[in-house]
Amino acid sequence: EEGVISSVLLWDTVFAGEAKRPRSRLALPVVIMAGGKGTRLDPFTKILPKPLIPIGDKAVIEILMEKFHQSGVDEFYVSINHRSKMIKAYFEEANLGYKIHYIEEKEPLGTGGSLRYLKDSGHKVMIISNCDIIVECDYQEILDFHEAKSCDITIVGSFRHFAIPYGVCVIENGGTLSRI
Image (cartoon, rainbow, N blue to C red; front, side):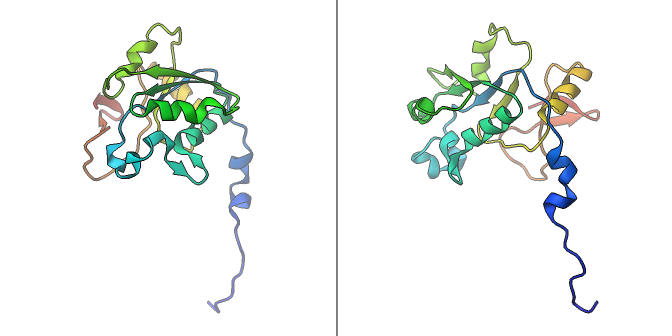
């Protein structure tokens, strides 16, 4: 009431337990969908493909891969088409500590179309992400949910109250995906 600060709460102090909690290590591959033209980011994508758009001093796809790698992921499948040579060149000389396999679409196959090339990969479960989605979460917790519910597919999404033309998930019955 007197305009005097009585205490200061620092993020590291308040959330110290969360920050220090060890995350589970994932032993499964991640598929990153990076083959689109990125038309919604035009004019930036006239120069760079969407996966290479920088956030700070790194490309968005590299930030995404680092987050997964911190959770134990050491194998990535990257679906590429539009400006694929630039994406491959970006990672060519990097010493990242994880493997990148490229799924090269000779022609655009649409959202998820390149997943057909992984049918015989031997992986029963994998995480699939768009190249520009960065989520702060415990991936093991999501995997545990997926397995506990015996899901065929688990989608991590966010609620939005405006119409967007792409990637809209229609949810019914408290969590059942009815269509995309």
